[in-house]
Amino acid sequence: MKNILLLGAGKIGCIITEMLSSTGDYFVTVVDKSELSLSRMPKNKHVECVQVDVTCKEKMLQVMDGKFAVLCACPFNITKYAAEVAAEVGVHYLDLTEDVETTRFVKSLSENSKAALIPQCGLAPGFISIVAHGLTKGFDKLRNVHMRVGALPKYPSNALKYNLTWSTDGLINEYCNPCEAIYQGELVSVPPMEEIEEFSLDGIDYEAFNTSGGLGTLCESLSGRVDNLNYRTVRYPGHRDVMKLLLQDLRLVDRRDLLKEILESALPITYQDVVLVFVNVDGYINNQLIQKTFAHKIYSQEINGVLYSAIQITTSAGICGVLDLLATGELPQSGFVKQEDISYNAFIKNRFGRYYASPEGENNLFDAE
Image 1 (tube, rainbow, N blue to C red):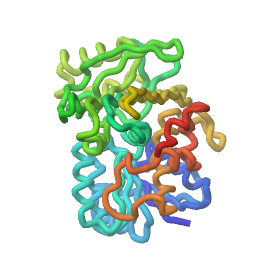
Image 2 (image 1 turned 120 degrees about the vertical axis):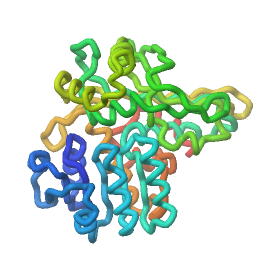
Image 3 (image 1 turned 135 degrees about the vertical axis):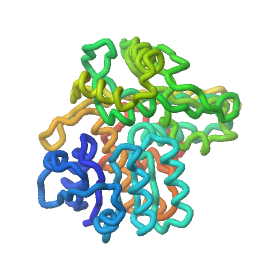
Image 4 (image 1 turned 30 degrees about the vertical axis):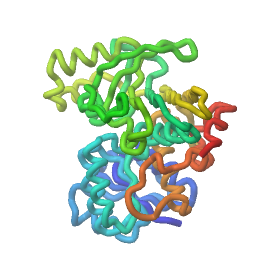
């Protein structure tokens, strides 16, 4: 049994704890500064809760002692504290951050690290990078890689057509920060909330627009190989315009704490949601222009008798699956590991990765891996 340190006892921390501890292969020590949050954690013989402030290095050194890996499910602005200590003591490190600067910081720590540092292990970035990179295998020349992801309520009931499904800090961060992309072969920075597009899937209309962080490290990995690479968040039509009103016209982009307070007091959490993953890749194979498309929806479901939302399941399945692959030696044991370094086929066959199982017949898209 491997000892795991989990930082963050929120909505995602809860299901990570449930997934890992229920296998009997992991003992999970959950750390959070909130006693109330810790009280909501699953209770079994493979779980221990400790009240500690993650930003306190002295305390973190104590709780990391003897651990196989530390998993960080904290807001992006806290992640660097955990990564720094993990790199110092040589404990494997995984996180869920979508923040570009935080990921660059983690990468800088990996140069002398004796353990693996694996950021961005969630949905987007995370699984979406595994899918996109897997689809690019076998192409002689790539033209376009388009990645679209949305975590949406099944039953939208307000003008935003949105409910809170994960970190509010992370949501605001990706709506406000510049976005990376590759355009005509060049790395560019594009503004968030722009380049809106509309599409339909299974008879439902959606919109998609630029948001920050979803590409992970793919710009670096595909540089020089692809003409156009971009990531956009999927929402129901009309959402982008309301958010632009709040962020730009009312200047709440400069008062993010106030915006967080407004959203969390007005928008209820929902466990009845759907996660949409949509990736298009086109290019040349044997001088033929070929397109490969991955489209899949994941819904909320019960796990061990408890209903979890689709975003909880997909996010936790990502980091738990990567941890499993690390524990079994299928991933590098030291240095910086990108999500696109992970084989789609290895991930989807994993006991946690199976929650992402693609529609029947689409796994052959990845045979070239």
